[in-house]
View (cartoon, one colour):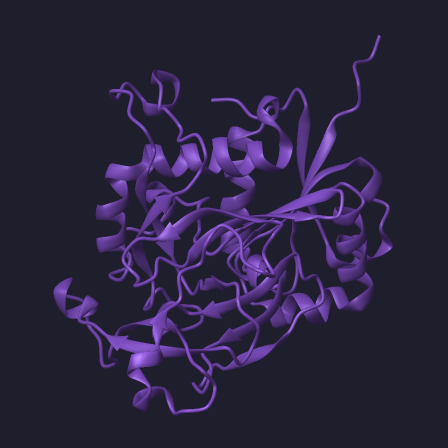
Length: 332
């Protein structure tokens, strides 16, 4: 007698998703998912638009790339299929551009050479996605990539056990480093209620990296909307992204950026109708072994992530998959 049909995890593959990111995402999902319950398959924009996948889907995943490509490939019809699927009880995982794509509006490199700003259709996250949080960003390059420190805000922090820690002593997962490349911060405030402030740093110099461009991080700053930002210091405050706000009652912050003033949200879980979406600004699917050790800009990242491979993979496994699929859907 045949067993119950496996529910399918669909990984978007097409315009807007970088092939390298998509392959890593597929590999890591196949590594962690309980294949007795789920299968993992690629899905094209054309297949997404047709919608036949909705009934058998356990999860729809979009990884890193560029969201204008997603918009072009999926169009209103494909995007609406994803939206309806989640609202009716489905699950969505968006990483980097997949998270930008799923926010209500985005501001990427505003006033810069790569500026992409505007409203988005999915609106799984009710606020904005502002980035890149660390820059400058360059497409098809890891020039602006970093290992960033995250703080977990999960209600019951994960206790790393032997099965997940490769023999390391059990300890709680509260802070860890993750691979960052072009991601942003989730901003729980309407457009026009904040400004971005660029804080210059010496990241490349400190790591002995070649650079002709000044590296920086950005800070989200609330403003009263009347006085210029630079002349209103007493009325400014760094935005702290709480677990909920007036427009975020269905949002839970899972991880925040530890080294950015105000600790803005890096990973969020959103309740969407009868379904849910987990959106990550950092590449939680990557550990140090997934990165090219011949790339000069990746070497300091690899060195940092080596000590956090356990935390990185436990987060990808225990948090993102359990939050979207349920605890029985993965294995260690």
